[in-house]
Length: 241
Image (tube, rainbow, N blue to C red; front, side, top):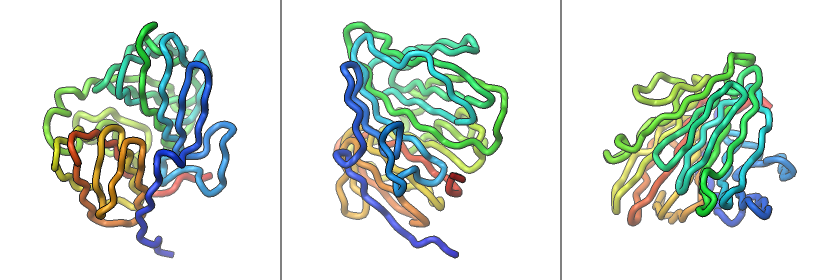
C-alpha cells in the first residue's frame, strides 16, 4: 500500500521535556519515561534529543548496543569517553559518530566548568546487529562555509561523510545565509530540524527547535530567514519496532 504524501509540523514547545538540575532536554520522539505509541520515531530515526547541559554536568557511563548515534554540538564543548578507549571533545562543526554494535559504554559530559553546552543527539537503527563497536569524530567546519547541505553521516558512501551502519539513512547539515534556498532530499521519510534561526517551508515559518516530518513529499524547498542551521535526516524505510 502506498504511503500518503504528508508534511507534518511539530513545534518546539510540544516536545517531551526532561528537567534536571544540570540538564534541560527536549525529546522529539518517545524517550525514557516519556512514551507515546504514536510518536516513536520517523523513518529510521528513533531519537532526536536537544540537550542543554550545565557547566560541569553530563551523562555518566552508560551502555548502548546496536544503535548508530550521531552527536552535533551547537554551542560549547562536549567531552566523550568510552569503554573502547576513545576520547574526544566536540565543538560546533565537529560531529561525532558512535556505532554501538555488540555493546559499548560511554560518558558524555560538559567539557567546561563555566559555560553550558547545547547539542543535538540522534539515533538511527542499524541494518546489521552485533558489529564491532566503533567511534569517529570529524570536523566539517570548512565544508559548512560553502552554501547548501553537507552530508555529515551516511550509509550510502557520500564522500566526506562519516560512514554509518545503515544503508537507508543520510544526515545532512546546512548553515544557511539570509534568503538562501536549498532543496530537501527527496526520500520516503525526511526529518527536518531547525537547530538555529528561522526557516520557511511551504509558506510555514519554523523557529529554533521546530521540526517537519515529511513522508513521500517529493521535491521541497526550504528558505532561510536570516542566518540559520538545519539538520535533515533522509531515510528509506520505517524502523522495525
